[in-house]
Length: 302
Image (cartoon, rainbow, N blue to C red):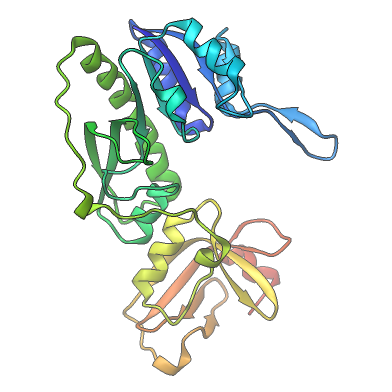
């Protein structure tokens, strides 16, 4: 089948690679516009555009998805299917172009976690399972009929980085399976149950702020769900500290009125929560590099 692939970040690259490795043909790639970065204002491409150019694929980077020239080019390709992985919200005039429709890969088991940050919220909320979903695009975001869903476990030691990578690779397999199903014409669509829908809003700075009055496990899940980016953080003596890694330490004695109290040995850092202590394993002081607790304590203390 002739495919137009749309994606922007690293998450989309394994899916594009799998399609290139399959019997299907990628006729065009669409990605986000180029950006100027750094002091020299050098133009940088999105990870997907960079990958596509290395593979000699034509790439479009429209500023507006309703641009007439862009839509005309999409129509001229005469693709069978549009495949969307971590891209923008497509207007109806775009997603209705291909004869077999357009589908999206989403990083959750829809209808759970509709929105911009499904992977983060699954970990922040302490879920033990997550997965990916492919679904046909409709006007309302993340609401279309489900084509395929595949799940995986969230292990206790997982963080955003490790779950992201697992879903990125699982998603690539599911994308090609979905294309094959659509080509054979034996898709059994599942309508999303609106009563089971939950939001996964964009992560803001306030969400990243650690509240030591919360239970230890909830704080630990927040740290895991935001590491390695953008990172949970706390403030101490007017300075901000990002936390990349931590460990539950519930067996220690604690006093409820001492929440937020920091204690330390020569090599360890502990913070009091509402029901125990959390051990900080890796931190980044404001304006400094990321470091383990022992390295931090060689020249610093709370």
